[in-house]
Amino acid sequence: MRRLIREPLAHFIVLSIMVFAVNFWLTNKRQRAENTISVSASELDRLAALYTVEAGTLPSQQDMQAMLSDYVEQQALVREARRLGLADGDTVIERRLAQKLTFMISDMEEVTEPAPGELENWFAQNQDDFREPQRVSFRHIFFTELDSERIATAQQDLSQTPEAWLSFGDPFILQRTYANLPDREIARIFGARFATSLVNVSDKSREWQGPIESALGVHLVQVTQYQASSLPQLDDIRDRVLARWQQERSREQARAAINAIVAQYDVNIETPQ
Image (cartoon, rainbow, N blue to C red; front, side, top):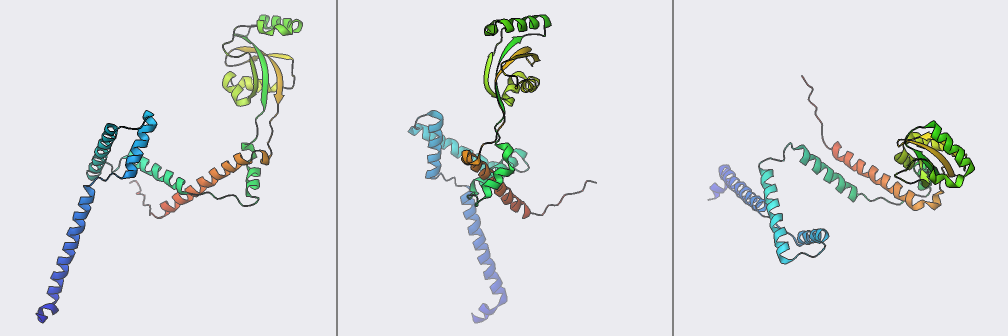
């Protein structure tokens, strides 16, 4: 017996049996795990919450059973698809997984408060993002086309009866009076050329100017108020500036984390023949 114990071949056989047994046990365990769909209490709560948001009421027993059946079916099909390799090389799935990991990294990153003076320096470098746009209040008389005779007549009548300005021109489907519109909103409604022309007459308040062409037709315009572009004080918009600073820092931290993940991999690019 002692001779058998000392025999190297016996050691090899015993070790092989042990390795085989451990591998068999691990394989069976992995297969059992792969063939087991577990539904946690938190997952049930999530399904119930989703139903409540969509339906506006708590799910009944039948509703929960239907959702549970759908969830189990989905998990089974997903695992079978993975087993068959259906997800391999699928651009949509790969992009979705990368996007999900990006969101997870962004959610995990915590942005600290700025150091003393840091927010002030950042605001000084990004003032244009917080500058209030110039705004114009105006009235307009609309003409569907450039009719010089009609427009000249309207201008002459306006000089005599300015209070009757609403009776001049053609019907207009939108408003005849606008208040405190920024340039981008004026351009959205009337077109960029009209917005540019309106700024050029903004210093001539209360005088009817024109004709000014727009994307809709031709207009006589009376600017009633002009508010120049201005930069608010940091103390007046500190919360908004801080939120923007934190968003930027969060993006920077997430990008650094993603770059660190990418740096773990060697990239080999095959040169086309």
